[in-house]
Amino acid sequence: MWKNIEAAPADSILGLTEAFRADQNPKKVNLGVGVYKDDAGNTPVLQCVKEAEKLLVEREKTKSYLPISGDPAYAASVQELLFGAGSEVISSKRAATIHAPGGTGALRVGADLLKRFNPDAKVWISKPTWANHKGIFGAAGFAFDEYPYYNAETMGLEFEKMCEALENVPAKDVVLLHACCHNPSGVDINNTQWEKIVAIAKEKGWTPFLDFAYQGFGAGVDEDRFVVEKFAEAGLDFVVASSFSKNFGLYNERTGALTVVSPSAGEAAVALSHMKTTVRVNYSNPPAHGGLVAMTILTDKDLKALWLKELNGMRDRIVAMRSALVDGLSARGIEVDFSYIKEQRGMFSFSGLNDKVVQWLRDQKGIYVVGGGRINLAGLTTANIDYVCDSIAEALTVCK
Ligand code: LMR
Image (tube, rainbow, N blue to C red):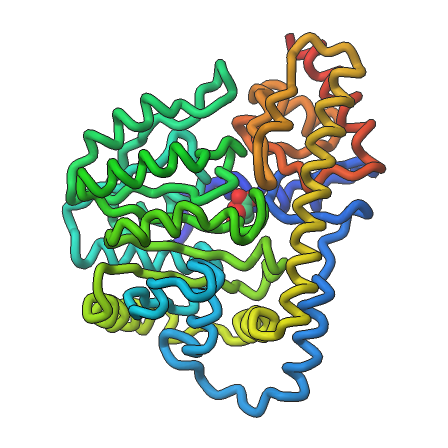
């Protein structure tokens, strides 16, 4: 069956981790995949997760199937995180949430759902975007178009051009937006700019699809939901894919959620019924453990406080590494001004390193950066920062 078939290329992000694992260089550094590391270079289980797991071992009574959409209590805690306690969207029941296996699972269920009811729609993605967005929406059968986002000369947001493009998106189409911590650029839309985008969506009628994989990594859990609140206030139909891989460190538990918001409770109930049929033919019902952990934390005052403390600690460490990188590079007399890295948010930065430099760093120094120059700041530690800065400085000279 396979002898005349060409092998598929390695995944541009997860494939890099496989190559990193095989690399024998003792000084190797993985700045590829978006996984948080502490200053010792480990990806620890959060203490709040450990505590919740202890409680679960005591309390769990069954491994029987969850409902197709997951535990309703999980959906309720996700909605509180998404919209804030006491939100009108929650009290009016105009949001429907299902427990999905990770952000990718949520995106795929959402993509399948929208494709069923809007088969001629195109999906508009930011230029650039997370490599897997095209894969997921493409697998659901969508065609794409891009809206301008990142300006490689100013290293900033191409806001005017982005708005122009969004003003011309047909009403039947879907626009995929990164709610915060844009992946791969780290360049975010500010609140005033979000208000303009919400107004455009309202006027033009296209469907916003928010990828919310980094809630809490931008400015904070409450601050990062600004765009969700604004779309909700506007009374539009929109979709949100949440991931708890990063903010709860539940990477391998595949924990996320898909939320459909509509103008009325009746419409949300219809949406939920179709979300369930989409899930049933896909993976039947979600894996329980990660969701139970997140729900246990979110519904326990002390565990939630511990979680927020740990989450804020992760965000602060990444911010500190942004400064350490910029200062370390400037201390090495590099002509290029990398100070924009300090302004970016979340785990990633479009470093401005070209593909030749990226390849050289990998081959010569065992430093792994995603093609296009995306670096994961959380892979930097006080132990490897000098090695990384020295190596980038050398690469910029050698690869001139
Ligand atoms: C990333 O962008 O590195 C992460 O979201 C992990 C992934 O699945 O690609």
